[in-house]
Structure formats: C-alpha cells, structure tokens
Image 1 (cartoon, rainbow, N blue to C red):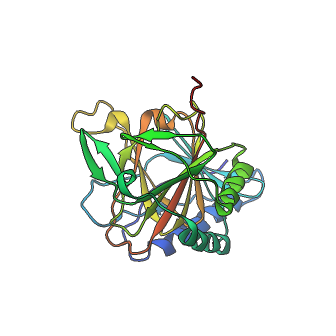
Image 2 (cartoon, helix red, strand yellow):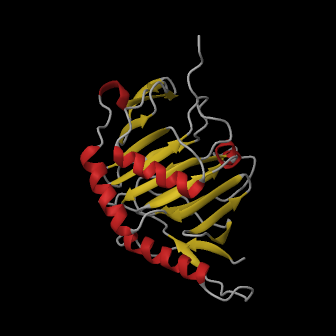
Image 3 (cartoon, rainbow, N blue to C red):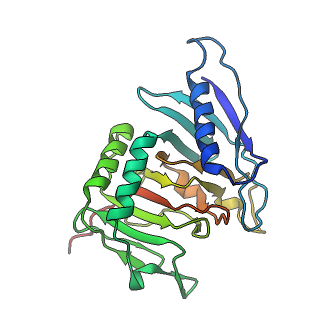
Length: 279
C-alpha cells in the first residue's frame, strides 16, 4: 500500500482553492498509479502555511496512506490517537449546485443562539450557525442548547451520500457558515454528552478551501507534557473528512482565521445524537 507525507507549501494563499484541486489530483494520481503488486512512485505533497495572524510553523509529519475504494479515493490520516479518512465526496459540478442551494435555503440562528459561554463570559460566535435533524433531539455546548430544525431535501441528499459512502447513520447536523477568512472557530473537541459514544463525525465542506488543524491535547500550551506536531489539512470544495474514535478524545481541532480568504465556506458536521432520557 502506498504511503506519502505532506509537507508545507511555501506559497501564499492567493490561489488556495486552485491548489486544493491540484493537490487532490496529485493524490488521486498517486492512488491510481502503478500495477497491482508493483512499487508505486512516492510523491511529496504539501499543505498551505496559510496567511493572516501569525501562527507557529505547522509541519505535518503524520504518515498517511492512500487507500483504494470502490468509487472514491480515500486518504487515511493517522497519528497517535488520531484516526480520520478524507475523500472527495462530490464532483465539482455537484458541489457547486449544492453550495448554491445551501446559500439559498439555510436559515441560520439569530439572537441568543449566536452566543457561547467561554470562561464565564458570553461571546458572539465568529461565524453563522444552525442545526437540523430529527425531531426531539437537543445538543448542548458552551452553555447553549440547540434544537434542530426539520431536515431539508438538500441536507438529506448530503446525509444520504455520507451514509452510502461511510456506512454510518446520522440524525443531526451542525452547520457553520464562514463568510470569509475572518470567520473562524477556535480549538475544541466534539465530546458533548449527547453524542453516541464512539460514533464518528462526518465533516462535509462546500465553498472556499480552508486550513483545518488538529492539535493533541497534551501538546497544547506552555506546560505541554507531550510533544506531537500539529496535523494540518486543506478541506476542499465537496470534500468529506470522517473523524473516527478516538480522535475527539485526544485531539483538538480548529479552523483558524485566514485574512486572504475572501470567499464563503459552509461546513456541515453530521453526528449521531442520543435521544433525550425519558422521565
């Protein structure tokens, strides 16, 4: 099975979306190259260093494996306690059509549901947010309890494709819209008590390509006890990142601000939420 390592891009972000497509094509060529049993060529792929506010260097040293699927080319992302799979879920034309529908049909939260409680203080969320899902479910994080709106046909279409490809069922989706690179989300883990234990989270992205960074919990801050390099990915238009157990036990993830990104991005994280306990 072919293996490859992702290093850093030295270029700026000006053509990040274009590079995402080039990078994906390189990965696809690598997966499909060579005869069965023959030694496949090794290529060095690179990830964008990003722009905007100063950040520490993010060399991605996690070894990744190219995996052949029946219809999709998967990239397996592995590090200590990190277990994720990445693929191009929709063609560009499909992704373009879905993105337009999402921009027209999604109705984002307003008022108090646009705030989160952090260290005892309420803060505005630096992005738009909404949840959709099965009737009767609730999801609580950062002091806010969210009840999902009824499924839309476009969301069911995306969910059904995710289920078809992964074999996992999902009853809830949290949607974040980033108007440009100034919108972001800080380091966090999706470990809320309402989530079904060991169930994966499926993250589907449309629109602008953005950096997505994993950082091991024991490697955070000045008092870090375990030195593991952050793992940095580029999440492209129409892509799927499947975060599997125990990723959210050990690793935090974030979407940092990137001021040179001018286009919007919509991200959908499909989850399996437990029904509320019966009285």
